[in-house]
Image 1 (cartoon, rainbow, N blue to C red):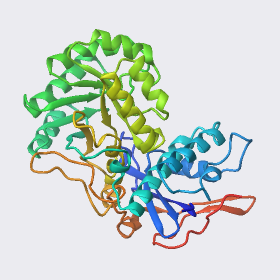
Image 2: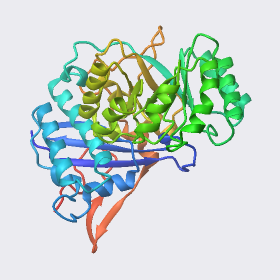
Image 3: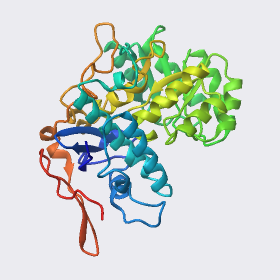
Length: 402
């Protein structure tokens, strides 16, 4: 097969707010090779990701991502890895390249799986898609009472693990944050897993993170996620040494394999969280999963958007029976909900699995997505280099990079 076209669909809520909710817009990627089609999703700014695919070259290693993808052969997983190396080399100085390529790479796996009638996790070498324990991923409330009520509501929905994050956590005093953590634990009860996400709020400042540990330990929190910038390995390691029952988690900000493995090797995280739509796709995420297993670290997916992205994030560790915790977007915006035909829902045990279906096992619903689609036209010197494809199956308006 030859990669004939890569099309981008930019969808967005009518109003995008400042809340830390990545489900407010989406960049879908459709890859076509002959009669076969695959879908992926980028976890990044849609317009800049599109631009990274079509931008004119600046020099030999600052080429558009499309220059390394269009026209390439796609006959097996080894071709996806080969194209990834081309992108890494040819777009070395294009910093958005990893995010743009991530969505394309996911779509290539989906296309290949559909062509072979195999789920992606099986093509990765796994014999079975094991059950995962989904944690409801939520934002902290505006007040501890709000957090308490949010915890009670999601506990009533049957979730056995919940993550609270962002909001005002880390922006005020340690005592204020302790009230939110205690409220979350009260609302969840004593049995559910409680996870806390600081959203990189302290940069590389160790002291405020240390001040939050007693409250987290008192509440029996499983982890403190992203206390620092993802490449701040020293404070991660120091906090990990100081923490007792609370594990340190991170990795969603990694856009290369080495960023993630360095967090394991030098940051001493106990949980490494990887977003396939950021790190370069499913293949790199699987590399990190393998390294985590060898290092005695728990691999966890990261996702906060659609069920297409959720399925992609599950594939790299679907076959790891002992790595059970997985992120589950419990309050996505409407654009993320309608994006796919199928949804991955918890079973009677409150568990989910990567779909046992060809590719990612998730079909995109362009008709339902139509009200949210944005029209993008990019021209240079009056010559079109990108125009949004029609929201129906059919030939794209612009297929090639010159």
